Amino acid sequence: MLVALIAHDRPGALPIRQENRPAHVAYLKSSAVVQQAGPLLDDQGEMAGSLIVLDVADMDAASDWAAEDPYGKAGLFASVQLIAWNRVIG
Image 1: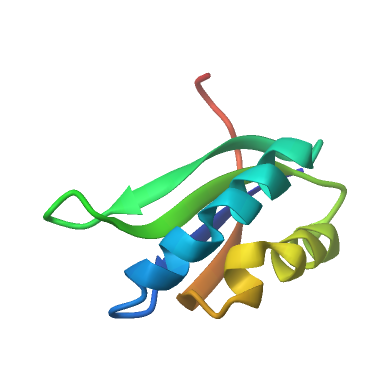
Image 2: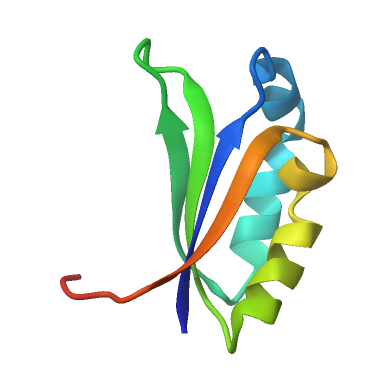
C-alpha cells in the first residue's frame, strides 16, 4: 500500500532540520520502502516540511517507519499525517 507522509515543521525549527538532514537523508536512502521524498517549501523557498511516499504493507508499518525518522526523533515536526494514497499517474 502507498502512504503519503505529510509533515509540517515547527515554527523556527530550520536549525533542527539542518542539523539532522544528513541522518534523515541516510535513513531515506537506506530504506527499501521510500518511493519518493522531498521537502515542502514555504513562500520564501525555505524547507518547511516533508512529503514522503512510502510503499508499505499497512498503516502500522508506515507509523513504524515514521517513528524511526531522524527528523521525527529530533522533534522537528509540528504535525505528521499518514494518508493512504492511490497512484494514478507516474
